[in-house]
Structures are given as structure tokens and as C-alpha cells.
Image (tube, rainbow, N blue to C red; front, side, top):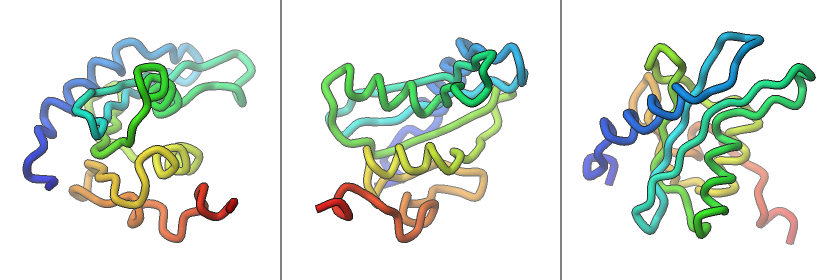
Length: 130
């Protein structure tokens, strides 16, 4: 399934998103893009805040766009910095991605395509709250 996806197009969407980042404090722009199970592409960029702890990661914007535009499940995901380099989601964002894509979500990483359950093994999710 990973071979059927146009990772270059998804990466281009993440790079475009990174150009809209608001990162005046760290100077570290981030863009993320994902494919949804209905074929939509959703994207997000990081938005910093003078109160550092309330900054929003690019994945937060992406997940908000997912729900704003109809919901669904994320199937493929890419995250880049402002230099167009692949980067890994932080821990909080791995949890967001797991919640909205599940263990089968595929992530393009610097070490190749990896499943979410490799990136966040033994994840805590909605099924644990039942």
C-alpha cells in the first residue's frame, strides 16, 4: 500500500504548509500533510505563542483540519521542517496521530515508511477508555 501513494505530492503539501508557519521565537517552521481515507489531503503548520507552552504543533492544525473538513481516518502522513527535511512528530503529536489514524497509519520518515505502531508502540487509545 505504501508504494501506491504519491509520497512526493504529500511531501510537497507538507513543505507548502511549512511556509505558513508562525515561528518567531524558535525560527523552526514545521509543516505536516496527511492523506485521509476518503482521498482528501489535510495539512497543518506550527503556530508559536509568546507563552511557549501553548504553541501548536503542525500536527494539531492537521488534525483540526481533518475534523473541520469531514473527519475520517488518516492513512499516510509526512512532517517536514522549514528546510524541507523529513522530521519525526513529537510525543504529543504521535498520540494525536495514533488517535486519528490508528496503528496502521503510515509515516514517511528519514528511515523509510513506518507504521504508527512502530513509532508509538503499545499506544494508549480510545479503546483503553472503554
